Amino acid sequence: MIRKLFTVILSVMVFAGCNTAKQAEPEQTLAQQLKERLDTLREKGYMFGHEDDPFYGLTWAYEKDSSDVKNVCGDYPAVMGFELGGIEMGDEKSLDSVPFTKITEEIIRHYERGGIVTISWHPRNPATTAPDGGRGAQKFPEGSAWDVSDTTVVKSILPDGANAELFKVWMDRLSDFLATLKTADGQKIPIIFRPWHENTGSWFWWGEKLCTAEDYKALWNMLQDKLDADGFDNLLWAYSPGMASDLTTEKYLERYPGDERIGLVGIDGYQWGTKEDFERQLDQNLAMLCQFAKDHGKVPALTECGLKNLTDPTWWTSTLTPILDKYPISYFLVWRNYKEEWFGPSPAKPDAAYFRQLYEKKNTLFLNDINE
Ligand code: BMA
Image (cartoon, rainbow, N blue to C red):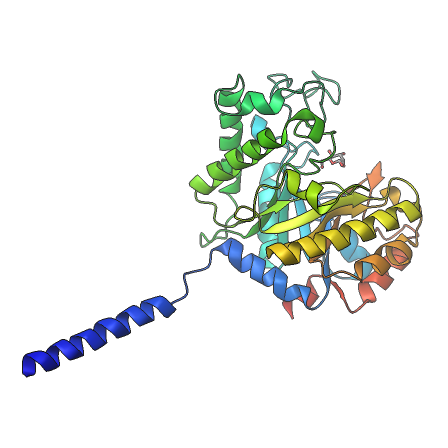
């Protein structure tokens, strides 16, 4: 009897134990936590993002705590974009002349002030770059990410290709840099990582006419598998083709690496032509993107956009926000404020007043809004 009772108690305990194990949620990775944060914030509105925001603006460079965006509206962008082109060469500065030590520093600072970080990478062309990195030795676009003179580059860096060993070294250097992105107590920083972007155009060596869909996916997987193996569970992988009039769901899927690999789906869309063309395409593409994101359980975002040099100062509120207001995107990010080419606001330019109107809107989120 006692033995029987003991067995019953034991089986109840085992059953309860199994049950607890079943109910316990598996621990979320930092990337999954970031995805959840983005989804929660999406309920409030869409975030504003700016590339290279803390490094330089139209009238200043490398002044601590400065930002053209903050100087216009009083708050930092919620999202800051950082670019790693040049890290593969072992260079000290990026292709945009930003010291990599400063990139590490500002990524950590933005994370610690509660902001969201995204990283892009325009690696040089592994088949045509000069061994010294081309600084001075090659004339743009030779040897750069924009060098599309050779259609065998992607194939050449895949396993057994002529440049496979070189590209392994490049991936190692990228990995070493990513390993610097942690807080003082060693916690990895969650990052939206967006390589091999605008791949449905043909202006980068990984572009549509430069490689087959199969080779593109092999390229994606090779990098992702390498960084996974190196332990980067803090990267939310983002896929972002360019905006186009023919960007249907089928087209979007053609080179899509797969639901198991991607957390955020984006589009890069600039206004290069008329306002009307831009509005039409952006509207169509965002409708497609947001439906795709919903069906696949992903976060949608306008991963790059802008009107070069804000030639229409009203653009922020006359063209952009009326369209963005219609869609549940996570953020839009405008490219850097470089003296010859700028996409963000800056205090002395006529678009500043319109940018402040964008800032005042309830559904546009800046740093303070995402930390309330
Ligand atoms: C481009 C331009 C270039 C820059 C590159 C990478 O769109 O802004 O000047 O080098 O992005 O940031």
